[in-house]
Length: 355
Image (cartoon, rainbow, N blue to C red; front, side, top):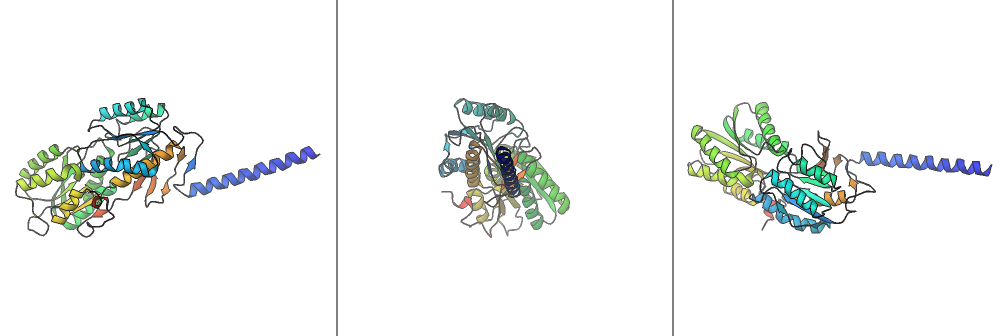
C-alpha cells in the first residue's frame, strides 16, 4: 500500500500546484498590463535592433530620431543607426527586408501606410523577428505592441478648442495621409465632433498627405475662395506649421491672438516651433505628441518582445493604458496633453527640452 499512498500524495500535490497556477493566472489577467515571460524569443532579449523612420523632413521626426539612441541606451537595447524611408511606403518595405537580411533580432518601425506595412511585417514574422510599431498602427500583420497616443483624442481636442473659441463660421481641417490610420482617426474624429457638438461650424478639408507643399498650395486656393475662414486645424505641425503661417502672412491674414481678424489655429505635434508660435500668438494650441516617450517605449517593448514577454490590456505604470484594437493588436496609448499659452512653458513638455 505505500506505493498507492505515495501516488495519492503526488496527485494531491499536482492538484494543489495546478490550483495555485490557475489562481496566479487569474491575478495576472486582472492586473491588465502585467507581463508574462514566455520560454521562446527571437533574440533571447539580446541582439541588434533595427529602427526605421518614416521621414526626416519634419521637426517631430527629427526629434524622435535624436531620442532613439539615448532611449536605446537607457533601456539596454543595441539599436543600429536609424534608417529613413523618406515618405515612401515601398521603400519602407525594402528597408525592413534590408534590416532583416542584416540579422537584426528586433525591429522598431514607424509605418507610413497602415495597409502597405503588412508585407514587411509578414517578412519579419517569417524570420521570427518581433516588431514594435511606433506612431501608426498597422491594419493587419503581427506586431508585439503599437506605441502611440490616442489619435481620435487629437481630433476631438482640436474640435473642442476651436468650438469654444469660434462660435460659428468656416474652419479648415488640413488633414494627413488617409492611407495612415492617424490621418483617418484625426480627420473623422474632428469631423464627427464638429457635427455633433458645434453644428454652427462649417468644416472645409484639405487632404495634404503630410506634404508641406500640398498644404500650402491647397490652403492658398481655399483662402482665395473663402477669405472669411475663422479657424484652422493642422493635423501635423511638423510639416504644416511653416507653410500655413507663410501662406497666411502672404495674404495679410496672419493676425496675432487678440487682434481683429485673428484666425484660431490648433495643431498636433508639440514641437518647439509650435510652442514659439503659441508664445507669439500666431497659433493658439497644439496637442503634444510625445516624441520622447515614443522612442523610450518603442525600445522598452522591443526588448520585452525579444525576451518573450507579452502584455494584456489595462493601465500601465507610466500613466497610459494598453488597449486591444479591432484588429486584435495591442496598443499602448500614451498621454498627449493640449498645450496653450497657459502651459506652454511647462518644463515637463518634451518640446521645451529640445536644444
